[in-house]
Length: 190
Image (cartoon, rainbow, N blue to C red):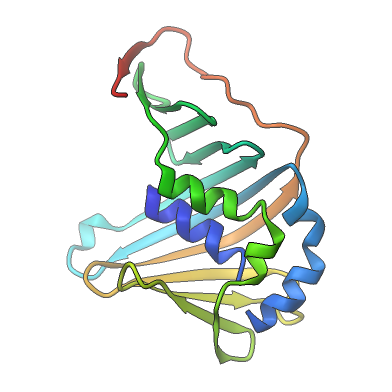
């Protein structure tokens, strides 16, 4: 999950067609609360049974607050505690925040950091970035006028290819950090 969130947040922030995207989406980047909805599919390079297709939503807010929904799993952060649960299981797991992931999530809230990502232009409306901490390569596919990101492809040469597509973003008023279970058991892993 951490890798997917990091890549979604970073990939929305990157290059040359990115300059057009940045100009068109500055209000989104500087807004206090935002929503990114998407579809994601993963293709394993080795095991066809590991392929999946899921719907996702990432709600971002100030103070490291977020709500991440991927399939049936939901992770909430009020900036101090992370709560993770599956809609079908009446169990909630409490965690200390992952500081590395919070760094990536808060990245989207700072327009100056967004502007500083180093990209390599692959072709018209395609930008790529490779992060030093891993072997992944991320390619961003922009629409014709570079005002939208059409899709994001993440290549992990040792495991899989992930495609994030159907990406929609919007500015929202707030983030719902409520747990949507009536009866549940809590496991505190802090």
